[in-house]
Length: 144
Image (cartoon, rainbow, N blue to C red; front, side, top):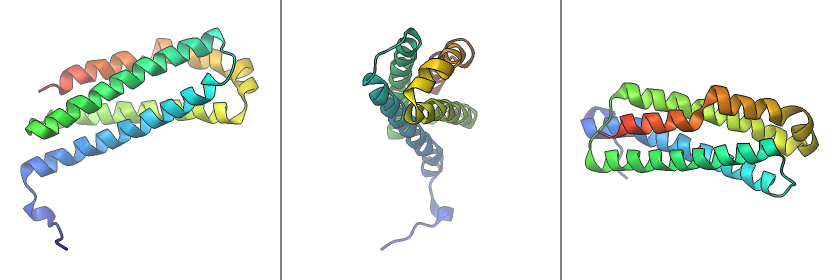
């Protein structure tokens, strides 16, 4: 079995690595979003949950579009500036933490979700975090 020496990696291979890591992180976020939506789908939905589901579905679409754009960059060896990749990675990590926070509550107690958590979470998701808009903005920057 042949081993890879990092000294002999091409520039394209070195630039592809962070993009593939970003794709992996985005897929992890998509899995968390899907798991959350599956659990929420099995219960009576409040107005806030309806809004959260809508935002999560739009966010999943934006993340999937990002994966598509990044794959195309890798395929064509056209790499966005590292600052954009870093910005995107930081945003996706922020999304992962936020979705994980909700998933933890959803797994814990759906009554707690309705009574004490979802109103503030929905407000923060809609007004402060604005993940969908931010991912779409970065997607535009990723197109080289």
